[in-house]
Length: 578
Image 1 (tube, one colour):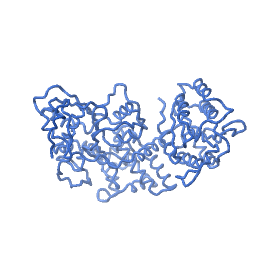
Image 2 (tube, rainbow, N blue to C red; image 1 turned 30 degrees about the horizontal axis):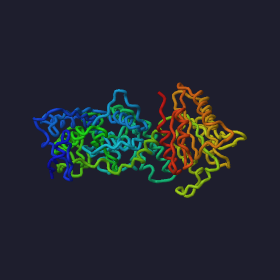
Image 3 (cartoon, one colour; image 1 turned 180 degrees about the horizontal axis):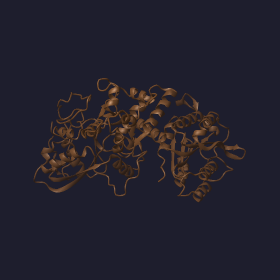
Image 4 (tube, one colour; image 1 turned 90 degrees about the vertical axis):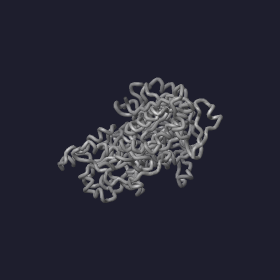
């Protein structure tokens, strides 16, 4: 059903579109040769989709693109999603693990079509609370597959046998593990989708085995990780002889489009696309109209969306080895062996866009990204845990375990993610904990390769005292300790857990602490301080006054069961040395 132009809307600047239950106005009704003026719409599109969008937009402009009598000019730019994400994050105050700073010349587009809705979810979860793009419907799709050299895939039963992520996990844990790689999942949506599926399979068993399998899967993927997709693809075997196949990359999560494009080049060893079950989150190419654009551009963006959901766009997608949002494909699409299609490849009625990655779990995505960042980076860290009397308080949401027990368990689980290249130390603090000192060193900072057992034993022996919170003296001493042994090329940091404000009447004042930190901090030897506040007695302003001087960040939660998740995210967000 099409709506008629409302008089008031028609009189508005550039005829802002009216939306009805039947959808947008047909773009044909709004295009014509008699338009005047010009609205310039900038569209940033994932590289593989850009030719299809550009072709459709060019044809629309050629036919006389207009809204309400005003001409429309569309600029389509092929853009790496991570670069646009960095720009949008900087504009909206979000922090994304693994995503660097936006370039000084980067400009936020009017419309962004990344390869995955996970980018939109990560921005919201990363602190861009006011980031609320319009539309968000899918305009294309590419399933995420496990790309595998055909000789290896054949040994696993491809293409006749249905394979699962558990099958792949078994290959990683075998006596002769499959050489598996990934494109950095903090910057690549297909890599992230594969990571989510593999860690879900690893964690399905629950308990200690799940943690061990998850960490093992992360590190197996990390052995052959690449920052760039082309670099990863170059690691697949380039000769069919068994020795080359055995030494080359054996599997990697990529998009269906990646596999088709790779095989079109007629490599010596073609790749099989394994559609593992349960199906991972596909690349869904959401059409996101970014917030803050002027009404004229918003109107033009609405009509461009309709252009990109016409039935003819399906064939433009097929030319780029992409599917339409419903999973079907247009003419000329070269489906890999075993490729599923909801309608067997038969044409389907035009749709008004698809549902973009419905049911995204931003928390699960955040947890996976954080775990990956920790398991694949190296650093030097002093963990400092509050053992004041208030840490004895019970946590109803944790089966009445104490705050102390919940905190120690979070630290213990985090420890399993750190590989042996990390250097870790452990302190506790209260007031007068070690004679007149508020803090006690349990384990000096040292390589986990020789300290892991000692740290685990020390964590197991932590008990709450009857003292108060000697925050300021402890923070200054911890900073000096990390500074004294500072190591170049690594992230040197302090992570401090506390459930209270400074209560040491005999210690230094807040002003003295900040003054001393300002004096001793060295921009050439940065130390990042992460403070995790637990419960409702914490002063976030007090904690932030410290991290504003040192760098790092303060995180506060009234629910102690959340500190494990916060701990992982805080570590993952630390800035690597330049």
